[in-house]
Amino acid sequence: DADVTQTPRNRITKTGKRIMLECSQTKGHDRMYWYRQDPGLGLRLIYYSFDVKDINKGEISDGYSVSRQAQAKFSLSLESAIPNQTALYFCATSDPGTQDPGTQYFGPGTRLLVL
Amino acid sequence: DQQVKQNSPSLSVQEGRISILNCDYTNSMFDYFLWYKKYPAEGPTFLISISSIKDKNEDGRFTVFLNKSAKHLSLHIVPSQPGDSAVYFCAASARVGGKLIFGQGTELSVKP
Image 1 (cartoon, rainbow over the protein chains, first blue to last red):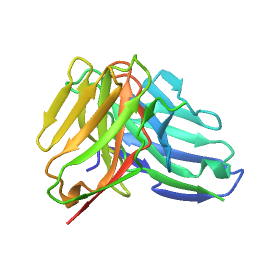
Image 2: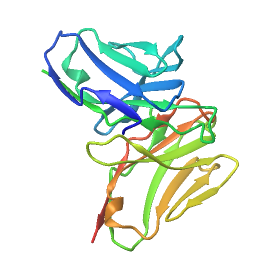
Image 3: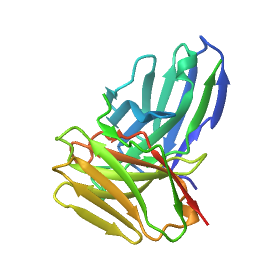
Image 4: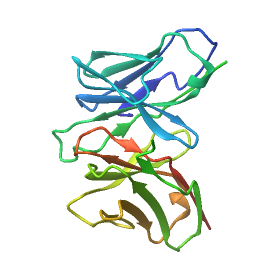
């Protein structure tokens, strides 16, 4: 079973629609992250959360919001989707208290197309 | 402002030879560096890391070298195998467990 899961895996939506991407993890990690990947730009951090009551903006948070419903769940919302939000979205987790505190563990990604 | 740069979008290597992937950074506060590997339709997976107190870290066929004065790191894969064909991302953080800043990625193709 995957430790970090993302739903949906693929989504097509229209401009102006609200959409939510969900991430769940069974690793027991406190820290969770949302990234987007675009060709030629690598992975860029959208939001991150170091625990349930801690939410922080990343480098490209405009147009996005997040919710940390529980330690295991971190959702990313696009309130009004626009075409330049078409990208591959990844959720990741990490745990600073482990033997490998710097490593992040990624989900399989959600491919989003905004028409 | 790209703080972590991978200037080669792609690299093609013959099976059995060495693959060398390069990464440059600009922020002198970075002190922890990682390499991730990504196959199509999958998330990135951790490959190897190095802290700034070292200049080399080795794990099997994979070795990462860090040159702090040049703000440059490289990943060596020896010998390269077709299964190594993937996109490789380098990443950096200002401290272990801190936010990661990723490079653009290099697509490695290992030909049989």
